[in-house]
Amino acid sequence: MYLDLHTHSYFSDGELSPEEIIDKARNKKTSIFSITDHNFLPDTASIKTYAEKNQIQYIDGVEISTLYRMSGSNFSLHILGYGRQLNREILNKNLQRTIDGYNRRAIAIIDKINKLLPDLRMDFQSLRLAGHEAYVSRNTIARIVAQHLKGNITVKDVLRKYVFIEQEDDTWMMTPKESFQLIASAGGIPVLAHSGRELRKLGHVAYEEILANLAKEGLLGLEVYYPKHSEDEVITLRNLGRKLGLYITGGSDWHGVIYTPEVSIGREIPAEDITPFLQDSRISTL
Image 1: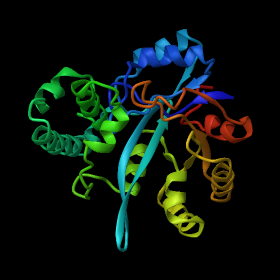
Image 2 (image 1 turned 90 degrees about the horizontal axis):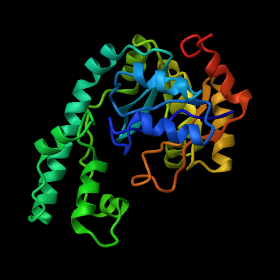
Image 3 (image 1 turned 120 degrees about the horizontal axis):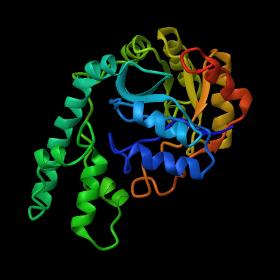
Image 4 (image 1 turned 90 degrees about the vertical axis):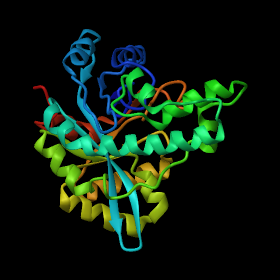
C-alpha cells in the first residue's frame, strides 16, 4: 500500500497548508494519509472533505512531544496519535501546557539570535500573530534568519548554527504514559515516532527493555517505515513490534521542500504490516 502517516503542515512546523499537502499526496498516488502536527490538532472536517474529493482516506493525527525519564538522563520521545475522529477539544486543552513551553523556548532562542544579529530585530509577538502555527517553531525562526542572511545559507544551515535548542525539561513536557492516556481519551491509538533514533542511541537490549515498558504503559504502535531507518533497522524494529504485539506504521515526516528537501511524501508499506492498524475500529471507516 502506498501511504504516508507522518507529515506536518503550517499549523506546526511545516511549510504548506493541509490542502496543499494533500495535493502533493494525490500526485504521488497516495491512498491513505495523515497530517500529524506537533502538539495541536486543527479542525479536520474540511481537510477530510478535501482528501475524500481526491480519493484519499484521511486519518486524524497529532505528534506529541514527551520526556522519558531514566536514571542518569532524560530524553525526548515523540508519540504519534491516530484516530478516525480524534477529540480535538480534549487533545488541545491538555496540550496547551506543551504549546506554552515551546513558545517560551522560542522567546529564549529569539533573544539569543537578536544578540548575535542585532540588525534582524526579530519579534516573538509578530511571529506569533503572523502565521497559522499553534506555536513559534524553530523552523519558522530558522527560515527568517536564512532570508535575512541571504546568500547560499539554507534553513538546515541556520538550524545547525543559530537556532539553539533549549534544554527540554519536565515542567512542560508530559511523560510518554501521559500522552498514551491522552490519545486514548481522545479516541486514538498511540504510536512511537521515528523509533530507529532511540534504537541507535541505546542499543538493541536497552531499547527493547524500554519499548516493553512503554507497551505496558499503553503504547500500541511503532513507526517502522521511516526515511532515516536503514534496511537493518526496519527489520529489527519490525521484529520488535511483532514480538511486543504493536501495530506497525510508517511515514515520511515531511515538513516541506524548504525544511525537508531530502524527503518526499508517501512510500510503499507491505499490506501485511499496515493492515492490522488500518482495521482497528479506532481507524477503520468500515
